[in-house]
Length: 555
Image (cartoon, rainbow, N blue to C red; front, side, top):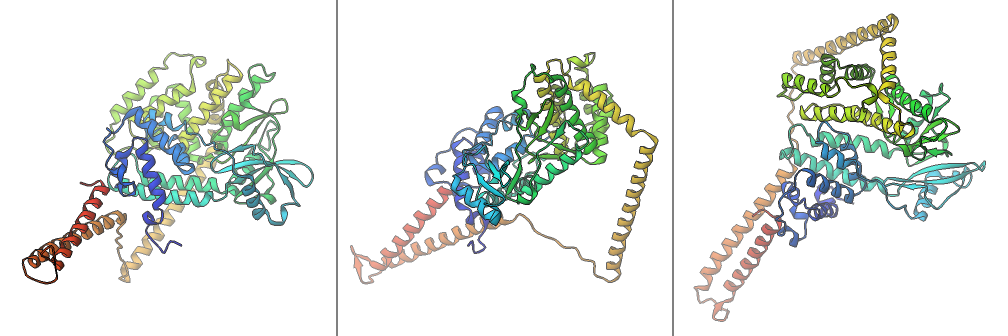
């Protein structure tokens, strides 16, 4: 029961853990800037004199802090690693090192949790669960189970109590983000509140296994016509928000397959084409296609697993992405500029001339190079740095896509040293562009645009009519709302309390001084007892006030 206490009191212990971990890793200056010194033990409030780190040292320490803080913060760091438009390359590089692997939960707790989730289905639909986890991460772990038909399956089960832990951390993150934004701790490009809101949506989706189940079902449907690509069958009747029961995939992980595989060239090209189809045709893609999440089953079939992280791209953005790759690979300067500026948000002080010169310089690095000599990973890294330098905010899925294609290139080259994802991509994109300029496709899109224009007109007319009705009826009102004042109110409370105690101390000293000059009885050491008591109380209150000021770190 929290009795509606403010968050910083309800979660005092967690705030204290966070503050101490920051100080331990040499980031005490952040604690001071966020005014969290009050959550530190007294001895640590006076000891931090270390110069704030910068560059790589800062990035490494931030990664260490996030790793130590646990699941929610690790996931936050992994999200930040996809935002190459907001953070410098060294920070992105460090965030990609965050590991989400922890020891498995006590099996008795897991089994008890599963029994509660499944009810009567446990023991009838699912006969048994293997006690040893197949894999374990901070949010969930997987166990092999035996179904009633003696088939084996894989159960992904959420760690008991993880929702509450992450919920507390999300509340704290939100409070700190508002505080950081109020105090302008970051550049205008980085908006902490917006980042945390985006992260909340991401992690809440990941905590809901029904969402992952829907992702798997959609992927299977998207590739139902391809005999070489699939994902695990999902037992929907046994799956819940906290459990996901899937077909057990028996094959070889892609990271265990090498160039000696008899179908290595076919698999390398199939993987690249599959990703491009996901992105440029389906608008729905597996956003974490590292080799551990891809199995080779049968002779040359590919099965994708782990759909906790997926990307989605609108129809309009799919066209822009296809044109972006086309412009990048064919060095179409004006087209590339326009597409980046359409996809992203420019800063207020945007220098278009410098933007054009820099993008021309970027493309010149690859001038005259043969396709077989180019690496998509290197091109994307250059493009990401270019976007960061010009402070253009891009959609998150844009960078998820870049990473997925770069991973696909690395996997393809591990399978086939002669593999070139750019050659495959150029052919694929050329086919898409040809397909989309067909008369019937153009008419279809024109019809969609006319419908959107009509819908916008209807929406605008409806809103204008509603406003005019309120004006006519004299009901139009403007509401002002104060936000993010919790910390200011807290500081005002502290200041007013200290002033009140200072006035009480002053009054006690003055009153006691007047009393000891009288002959009032009783007396101790020939001093009036009442005056001595007044001095004692004033001294104790003064000492407590000094300790409070020292502990706050504001002196």
